[in-house]
Image 1 (cartoon, one colour):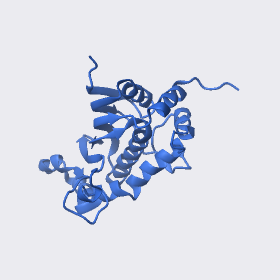
Image 2: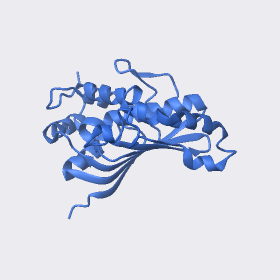
Image 3: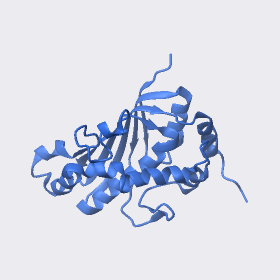
Length: 232
């Protein structure tokens, strides 16, 4: 019997683990309580990783990254289109609105400099992405009937000079959304660290349910990502 529950993947950065996660979920069709722990996904250096998508300071394997970007999914959209959409959600879209609503992100920015002096703040460095009552924001549970947003919350944790970020998703599509979501989260962690003078630590992604959106395309994507580089 296939075990669908609690699978943990650990790696240094996004590209070193993404193909493994894609293959795991593709093989099973669905995974519950999928956990991906990235030890060093973001760097504070101002290195432009991808000028086209304005990705800065994320530790990516550029060869694998380009393979994903250039892949064409069954809906005719490229991997680059998929990443761009996820980044937009965190930059100015519904996830940006959600985590900044009610002063949540501002609270974290104010709290981090004094968190070591007031231990009660340790458990309050969270941003909830689902609010069923506030009807003016696009991320609201009711306004998205019958489907609430996939991102549930983000939670910042301090480890000495390092700041970790944990994200919880009620649902994530590993083939079409996860890669872009992970990049966006790494950039968010980096941004908060730059503003609060902490060093980027772990990025942990918890998907309560992980799925494949386009199974046929996902098989070809996995083959592409695992293929050897071409030799001129």
